[in-house]
Amino acid sequence: MKLKFCSREEEAAAALLDEGWSDANDSELRAHIDECPHCMDVVLVAQALRQARIETARAATLPASGVLWWRAQIRRRSGAFERATRPIAVVEKLALVAVALGFACLAAWQWNQISDWVLQLTYLARPNTSLLDTLWTPFSGVSGWILASLIVSLGALALFGGLAIYLLVEKE
Image 1 (cartoon, rainbow, N blue to C red):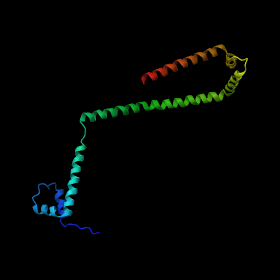
Image 2: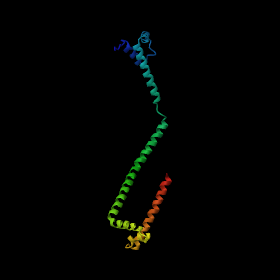
Image 3: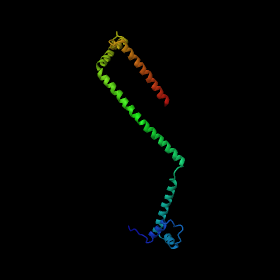
Image 4: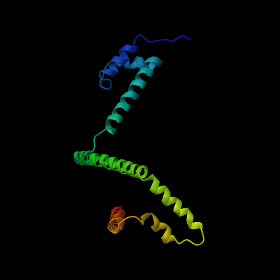
């Protein structure tokens, strides 16, 4: 396959690049382009590319300045909010890890009492045992004020935990 080129193809391309093609008075060049298929293709492609560039430039116009300012303010506020809440999120995660680690250490420290208590729960299957006696037996050696403080602490934990859950659900 042989490709043929026109000697005036560069001249036609240069005339299109000058942005003066429509105002050009060179009737000889216009007559040549009308007759030469290679030059006609160059002009057709160049005009299509120029039209596409103009349409792209029109489509790429910026929105109104008020809209740009509003978007910038929203981005700035959300960025500030994220930066302000990042330490809180880190502390929350550290607190959860600390609580889990504390429960794990407490369970390891009191493993014998926990296993005895769980073992006593298995005796509930016997017909002549009551639930209250079985649950009270591990606390029989504990003095009264420790047991009372434990019950008050568990009640306060339940109260404040329920309040926190209520407030979280109400916000959403």
